[in-house]
Length: 228
Image 1 (cartoon, rainbow, N blue to C red):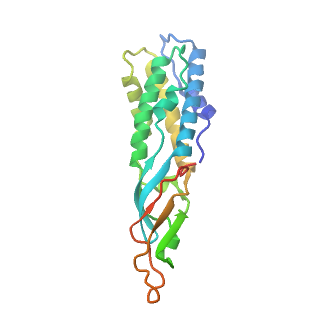
Image 2: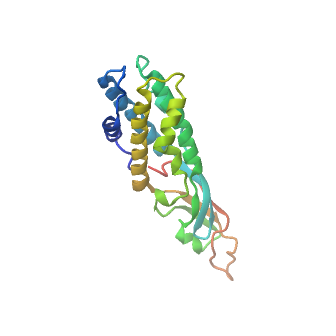
Image 3: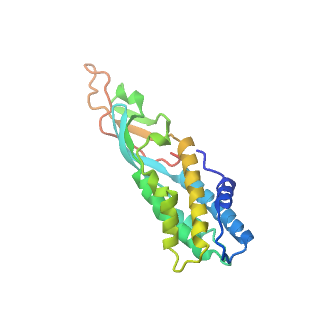
C-alpha cells in the first residue's frame, strides 16, 4: 500500500490554487485548510485500507470472479478532524460528505474479473481446500470505476454541497479535487491486493479412484487488510 502523504496532496493543492481577485480569506488560512483537510484525508484513507476487505469472491479451480469490497465510511472519519472554530467548516463538511459517498461508489465497483488468484486450487488432494491467501496482484487489474474520484466530478459535487458560493470556492475546490485525483492515481498504480483468503470444496475428490480435483464454488473469506 502506498497512500500518498498528506504533504504531497497539500503541496499539489497549494501549487494549483488560483485565488479569485475578490478573495476574502487570507492566503495563509487557505494554505492551513489544505494542510488540515489533506491530513484528515490521508488518515481516513489509511484507516479504510487497514480495515477494508475483498470478500465473497467465487472460486472455481484457480480462478476467482466477482466479490465485494467493504470498509469503514469516510464521512465520520473526516468529520472527527474538523476544528469547530474553523472558518472553512462548510467546505470541510462538503468534502466529508462527497468523499464518503464517492468512495462508497468506488469501493462498490471493485470486483475480480476472472483471475488465477489461487493456483493451487486447480488440483487439491483432499475434500476441501484449506484457507489459502491469494497470489498478490496490482490493484489496477481489478474491475473498478476510477471515474468516481475524478477531479471534475469531485469539484462540482463539492460546490453543490455549499448553500451559497463565494468567488473563491471554485478555485479552492478545483485545487483540492486535483490533489485528491492525483493522490488516487498514485495509490492506484502502487497498491498491491493481497491476502484474500480463499477456501472451498473439492466435490470430485473420491479416493482411491480420484485422489485430487479442482475447487468448485469456493468463496473468499472477509479478512481485513486486503489493501494494506
